[in-house]
Length: 235
Image 1 (cartoon, one colour):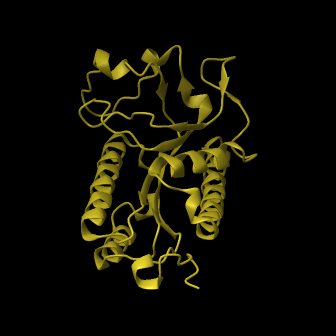
Image 2: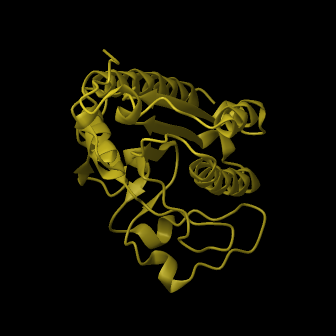
């Protein structure tokens, strides 16, 4: 039990640091909304901020002994309840001493209380990880109409995907090992009421202690309403 206390403290410390980094990226976007044009831009910008932070930039030893690597990664696939690599968060931060890129077959993490055949295609990624992980789901709305009802439905589908991941983690006894940042950047500050409803559902949901939703805006003003050369300040 004593060995897990520092590990948990480090996990919480990383979560708190990430919140500050996302806030900083959000402020930069608000001040310079042309910094992010696509969801890929958002991912690259957030990745660069994370990987340059002293908290995450140091290469650490993996479970393979002398092999080292940084903990920030993109689109690393996760096994679902059927043993398929069907869950692929946009980004993740892994516990590097619980990552293997050589002996990954012996480290495949399976449920404790059920049969779970590991298929050959499930090992196709050629690495395996377990332990504490922080995952990111990123959504960027570049449309001048903002977060429409249909866009919010897309966010809800991604959230349901994360819910399934948590259900699977819970069945294995590893629910507390994963924390999710659901990050939504919006070019304007226009939002359909369904978005606030979804945020409220998440805040009251079964996994509210294991994730947070972060909303940031570029606050760009619709030029049809403020003139062809309207600035994001509205002046």
